[in-house]
Image (cartoon, rainbow, N blue to C red):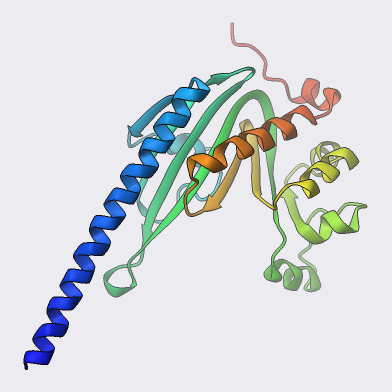
Length: 228
């Protein structure tokens, strides 16, 4: 009986230590994000309005709209050059009871003056290869290396081919494989988990590099018409 009591007390102590460590780690990360925002001339908001994620859900972007208790927080936002940046943490809950799980993402989004057709460029997975064998193929390109690494999908195949030209393929292959999404007015990178402040400069540079390689004729075709 005494041994069981000691095990119970040890479990409680470990849980408290873990919770305290997690709290201090979150505070340290938040401070790092705040300092990064200040250096970059961005605004930092630890708390965000509940309806904020619906902007992306309405555009059909993932993982928005999944699960319940959806929440965005630790938002860094502001204008730098021609890009309005929105960098934030996002989470939602699935299951219940013992199967309850919180799913977290790091999001780097750029709001741009282009009505890009909904397009996804993401790392190729094993299930994609199985689907291809069954006849459900993605949009393939001349570069075998690119087609092996990335799964490209979207309703406008012409736009996908115009966007992912040889120089764009070469550029994306030079970067770590990431999950890209394009939609009207938005380009986004998402990753499971959370980004640290140290990761953000590279992700913003990757986004700027992709936008710089969008051909001029594509820019003209998808340019948003100014409202009068």
